[in-house]
Every structure is written in structure tokens, then in C-alpha cells.
Image (cartoon, rainbow, N blue to C red):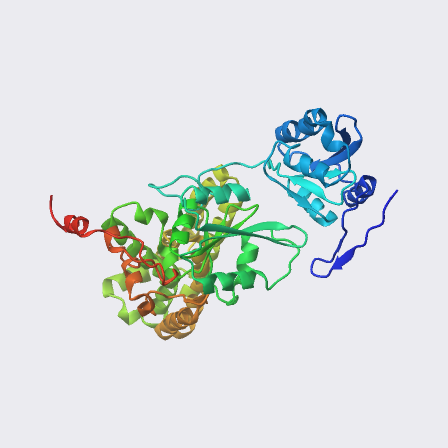
Length: 526
């Protein structure tokens, strides 16, 4: 039974009715329990507080989502037992009583007030505890989050030999802490918002206030406000919604599972987006050069990692061009093949009833199926399927004269090359482009092959990520005085990379400063 009627208003954006809290505790309880009707996981209790038990309170939270010890020791024990020794605070039902409960009756510092039922419900759904008190049209929200999570584990998508073994978790606050451990600076900001009218997912924008470009930060915030969606269950949803060139196969957002990589990006002036319930963070803006960089590149000697980067770029080119190149060469331009190699290819293809295009498609599709099966199956079985299945299928199709051995080699080299790319998102783009190159080469030969390369390069030149050229620093390098070329195809020694990349604000470009004596010692043999 409602003891007091309160006015409500309708929020058109969230399509919800916003109800102010009432001073009647029974009225608030009725409204709250109506919202959580048939929710068996919500724990609710009404209890008296004060020495004379003349003031009643109502507590509610979701089981397992909270830290029960905090509720029992910091809330219930304080309100039911401890405050009974201070009866003076409860002699009158005025603001002083509520202030005493808030500031002296609860043994916790992380609490806040809410004045609407929607905010109270959201607090409970977020893992906090709500306390309604008789005689007051506001409630207390106590931070008691205790979500079950798998903790900090090694990242399984970006493994390194030398470097941190910590990976992001599904818990939002754990992820922000992992970055704060690496950047102990008050300039590191965490701008937290909620996206999703149903899921109310916590999304955090992490950046260094004095390094980030204000235009980049503003653009990201505007893009996050362009849409209104029911739920955001993974960062991939945001990634697709904030990209402007949605038709492009190339990712315009970098995805990482490594806190050290995210921290490095923030120190470069970029913005990291942390999304609750996912271990994958988004980094904006990005360039194609960023996808060829690994966290391990900066932990080992420069000439070794420069050699590996050159291998990555070569592998990236082979991953989408090798099958098309083979088709164009054998189908349209066999005269360009050396004589001995031409005889070997002809002997290997003897008895094969299909043209080169069909051979390549058969093996590529078979490999895609094996790769997908290996990912979806449990890890022990998936590894077995990938190895044994590949060997059996490859040997069987060759013995059946469905494909030639040279095609198996071509497809295997293409697959190995794709695995050498550090970014899975970029690898997926090359998997799609590969078929585009295959069909162009099958129709037009080398003309189609080079036409495909030209189309890809033209598209990359026109592509931008938050107004940053996608091919930077290979184009528009003068925007940062060509300093970014020192960390591109070749990674120069650390002491030479003194300036921040193009992403950073022009007011704070220097990230390494070596005095004259130290710089002299770098080149002088001691």
C-alpha cells in the first residue's frame, strides 16, 4: 500500500519512467519490490536502527554480486548494533539523523546518495547495496561490488617471450587498476560512462590529460554519443559503431588484451577504451603501422626486432598475394617461369582435372574450415584437429589428384605468413582480401594482380582513424617531422626515439631526454 504519491517523469532516451523517492519507507519498498518482482536473487531486509528502534531501514542487494563481509561488518553491524549507543542522533527525524547515518553510522568511505528509484535500482544491478531510511526521500548507495571473476591471467591472444604475463580480465575495475599500476601519474584520467539502455555497461576512457590531443578525445566522445543501443556485451560492438569507414576490411581500432600495450598507447597520446565484461580493450586512433608492433619489440635489442618487423611486413604481403600471384603466373604468364621450375610444376599437376583457380579454392576453403574447427573445439582437441587434420587432408587430396603438391605448399606458406602478423584483426582483413586478389588474378592475370594491389593501396591512402592518416608515417610523415619513421619498418634504438608519435599533443612531444654526458657515453666505448 502506497502511503505517499510522488510525481514521475518519462525519459525519452532510455524509455523509462523516472520515479523520485518518497519519505515513506513503505512506499519506497513497494516501488522497489515491484521493479524486482520475480527476482529471486535479490536479497531484501527491513530492520530497525537506533537505541529505541524508532527508525526503520530497508537494505537490498543481489546475492553473489556483493562482498558479504562488507555488508555484515560495515553496514548491518554498524546500523543495528553500533549506532544504538548514540540515541541522541535519532531523537528527531531531521537532516541531522540522515547525516549521522551517512557519515558516522557506516564503516565505509565509498558511498553516495541517490534521489530516484531508477538510480537505486541501477546501483543494485551494478553490484552495490541500497539502503532506504524511514522519513527521508533519498537513499544511500554503498559500494559492495564482489563479482565472481577469473582474475588476472596471461593473455591468450598476444603471447610474448619477454614481457609482462598479465592480461586484462572481464572485471572493469581490475582492468583500470592494471593500467594505473604502470602509469602512476595524476594526469591519467578515467572518464567513465554507461552505454546501453538495458545492459548499462560501464565504459571507461583512459588517457593522459596533458598528452592527448583534445580534438581526438572530443571526437571519440562524440562518436560514443551518436547511438542509443540496448546493450553492449563486448568491446567489438563499440568498435563497429564508432568506425566511420564500416565498409573497409581494415580495422580502424586496435584491440589488445595486454595492459602494458594499453599503457604504452596512453603514453603515446592515444585513448584506451575499457569495456566491462570483456578482456579486450580498444585503442584509438591507430595506424596500419601499429598493427605490426608487438609489446615485445621494445623489450629486446633493436636490430633483432627490426629484422622481425621486416619479416612481419613481408609475411603480411605474402598472406594475401601469394595465391593470386601463383594463379596469374601459371595461368596467364607461364613463360616467365624458369624452365626447370616450369617442368616441375607441370609434372606435379599431371593428372589434376581442375585449373589452378579451383585447386587454390579447394585448399583455401579446406584450411579455413580446419582453422575454424580448431578455434571452436576445446583446446586439446582443437590442436589435434589442426595438426592431424591438416596432414591427413593435405596428403589425401594430393594422392587423389584433386590438387597438386605445389598448391599445398602455396596455401601452407600463405597460412604461416598470416600467423606471423601480431594483430588478429589485421589478419582477418588479409584473409578476405586474399580472395579478392585470387579472383582478380584468375580473370586478368598479372594485370589483375597489380590492379588489386593498386586498389588496396588507394583505399589505405584514403582511410583515416579519428582523423589520423591510416598509412602514417609512410604518408604525411611531415606532420610529425618524420620522427615516426624511427619506429616503423625499422625500430631504431631506444635512445633515438625521443619524440612521441603523431597522436600526442604538440605541447608535450618529448618523451626521452638524455643529457650531453649521457648522450656522449652512448657512442663512446667505456
